[in-house]
Image 1 (cartoon, rainbow over the protein chains, first blue to last red):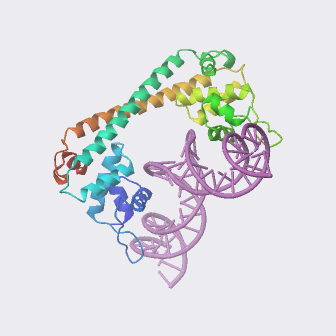
Image 2: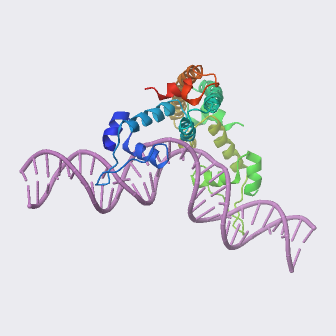
Image 3: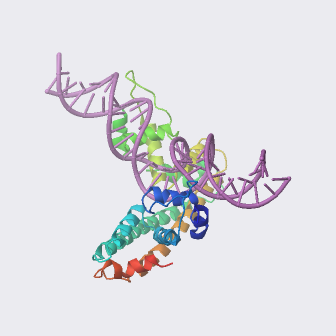
Length: 130
Length: 130
DNA sequence: ATAAAGTCTACAGTAACTATAGAGTCAATA
DNA sequence: TATTGACTCTATAGTTACTGTAGACTTTAT
């Protein structure tokens, strides 16, 4: 199939597929006479894997590593576990940050009821303090 | 004071201050004979405001708008409230996404104990499914 | 006089795409 | 057969909010 069909099949955009190839996540596709990329199911399989990982928030670099490990199926898999553990930790950090942020924003929000002049706005006043 | 002192005072980097000026968040500083930017307390005041906003996760565009509103102190402040409400909503969306992500990652993590070969790794198997 | 530290502008790089320009390919229609 | 439209190609710029670098200039200290 050509890249448009693969895009439709995987739910990725044409540009994204080309980008993944360029970044070495997807192996270079063979070309037709007219220089069009031509794909088989292996490609869609690989793209679904990448998509799954992206949905979990893994970076392209982490995915590159996972792909690397999959090429040595008899090695120990602790590197794979490590990537996931690491990623979970990053998500936890980000979650804590966002929750604190949400708390501060909620507090800030109570400072004004939107019926003031800018110069009397409690939010503005709060932001101007330090 | 020169830019280095201002940077130390505000905790921002020299480049960041120049960047804010370039982006129109900080008004252009007067220059010395030797073409060095020269600042007074107004600048540090403005930078603390920007920093405060950045710490709350506001984008530079949102901050630009807030600065714009502060120049019309007699107008109604509902635009300011709107920016904050909008931002809170974005944070809530992101929080929900991250929490779902965390749940999925936790579940994925249970699939392997890191004592397998790559080809038997439960995490890898899960990622390969679709 | 000289060396070190600070500052200047302009540009490249970051992550993971998205959008655009301009050219070429292919299938179907007039 | 000519042409239209849909699809694809490469290469490049733009996105966000900075950070880092190169090369030149200014100021301060020895």
